[in-house]
Image (cartoon, rainbow, N blue to C red; front, side, top):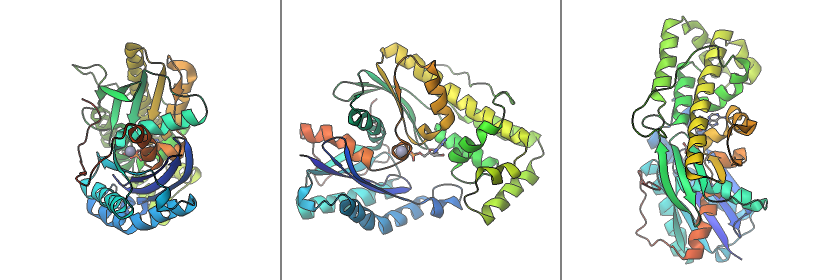
Length: 361
Ligand code: KG4
Ligand code: ZN
């Protein structure tokens, strides 16, 4: 029996989870800092570090308690080493080292992006329908939009990535621009079905060079231009007022302060992002003759993306994680550590937090 404690603190979620024997999720605790950062319209790094420091001990403790585990049961403690905010990463890395030292437990450093991919690999294995290789992984979150080839034994090759904004970042910036607060992704997802995705024409960015790279800043600017060309100050003020009264409005409340033309912008924006993501995913899956497509990261929660991917547009079996395993969590970090445990790839106390850690060149 092998039991791994995973710890994640790369951005604005403090998380701890325990997994037994590769696929059995015993606990999965996530303390979100949304309430702290929401009012600033984005993650404030100094506040994030402070919140991680406050949360890390109780979060790890409740993950251990929920799993009814004690320190001596652990085969390893796995921690996100990067990429992410360096002050945030440091809290997780330092605490993991302290646990490893105090309880003599092997330490494993994990790349956050590899974690997102392993969320899907773990769930598929748990269902008895393992991922088949080579696989194509599309990692779409607030910080990353990457396409990787994943080969047997977890060898990664980068096929394409965003040249500017990540997809989640585009959702967040557009959400903020239109007065929907932070993060924008979930609200845009909620409202997009109420607009016409062909209502506003947003053209895909033409790019030279690698056709598998992404670019979302042009699309974001196109939405900005639309807001400048239309008189929307009043409705934006209405939404900000709604957020002041109620930090988590439901769909009906949003609809009451969002006219059809804005719903069309939202639907058209989301539709364009989905098209860009899926077109490149399909093309790269073709190129590497992928046998599975893995979509992961916060934007993998998007219901429009899930529906479009399932409606037979992609050439092979396409897997999304359960929503709770799409956004940042520590189960994915523990899951990614099992192959390293098997191979004896342990870290020493020199393990560093690396803000720009990459998964593959
Ligand atoms: O993976 P994640 O929790 O953190 C990073 O590693 O960045 O992803 C957070 C991102 C945010 O940009 C958020 O707006 C986006 O995922 N997101 C969504 C949805 N839920 C979260 N984007 C679109 N639709 C959603 N339902
Ligand atoms: Zn993430």
